[in-house]
Amino acid sequence: MKILLTGGAGYIGSHTAVALVEAGFEPVVLDNFANSHPLVLERLADIVGQQIPLERGNVLDTPWLEDVLRRHQPAGVVHFAGDKAVGESVANPLKYFHNNIGGAVSLMRAMETVAAETPDASPTLVFSSSATVYGDPASVPITEDFPRSHTNPYGHTKLVIEDMLYALHAARPAWRVGVLRYFNPVGAHVSGLMGEDPAGIPNNLMPYVAQVAVGQRDHLNVFGNDYPTPDGTGVRDYIHVQDLADGHVAAIKRLLGGSTSFTVNLGAGRGHSVLELVSAFERASGRKVPYRIAPRRAGDVAQCWADPGLAQRLLGWRATRSLDDMCADTWRWQSGNPNGYRSS
Ligand code: NAD
Ligand code: UD1
Image (cartoon, rainbow, N blue to C red; front, side, top):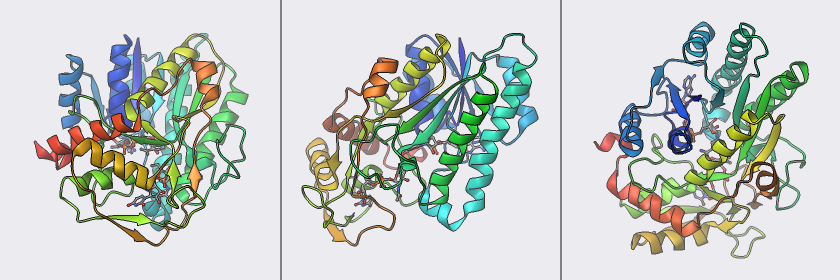
């Protein structure tokens, strides 16, 4: 059974491709490599022992997407493709509205057109949403019925796409839609062959810490130590990318099993502070991670973690890997590939 992964060469998509093969599916990667490297396909083949088909192109190209869908007839589509840098979205909102919202509309239209050619089709779509849709949550842990808001154009695109999917499902009940709200994906494939490869200076904590540990950056700036948290630094729900990948397999299985649409949090369900993550990384790597306390980063919240109970009840899924696993796997990837996929 084929599953089309838009943005499948990216960080989360590539790990999901592995999990799908392990679960007996046939992933097809669609990507324009705007934020990834073609070498990912070679690494994927090394891990799963088979070549994963690649469709190289842009999700904004609706007629081409229709052609891809007709040729592969996937049982489901996971829509990862999009831009994800919060700061860039503030500086260049139109890029985000065009690629993220435009890309989602293009995909939905292509799926609708192709589905109309087959009697009784049930277009099946899983969407990469984010805990960013909860804005500054009133309390933790966060359940799916918390109010949604946005504080930057990136977050706004996730909210708009969720709403478009809900409207589409209301108008076309045959569609099966899974909205997955990721918390903080980190870590790398346990083989050390695949991981996160941010372009330029990393925005997120784990890749920054990894680059400090490997000696590429001098020190970490800890954004604030005066939050109302146990050690004053920000607390987040870090989830191993392989656990997250398994969550996609569970969501696909549930939808293909005939379930109606759903929206679930994918998080580990516990919070770790910045300083806890730094200590865990030092243990995993055997390296010092020098840090300095810096001012708070605009738009940051004190704490954010999931109640993952709905995902467990609905999908039979829960995260199993610890913060130590996340750091050990990140370190294996970072130390073996200090310049990411450009190392080879
Ligand atoms: P990523 O940048 O590594 O992967 C996205 C992939 O999409 C890249 O390979 C990129 O080349 C591709 N892409 C972008 N625009 C495209 C287009 N128009 N046509 C074809 N391909 C295109 O990002 P990721 O971390 O794997 O994230 C995947 C999804 O999950 C994104 O939608 C992101 O917003 C969402 N998400 C990520 C995080 C996170 O922390 N990584 C958290 C919450 C949600
Ligand atoms: C960020 C994005 C969020 C996105 C999420 C997933 C912002 C404001 N939010 O969230 O929209 O959905 O990534 O990718 O960018 N930290 C440091 N020093 C650093 C980097 C981070 O101290 O160099 C701290 C942050 O203040 C925070 C924690 O580490 O307390 C985690 O930060 P990060 O990895 O950027 O994730 P989020 O802030 O949760």
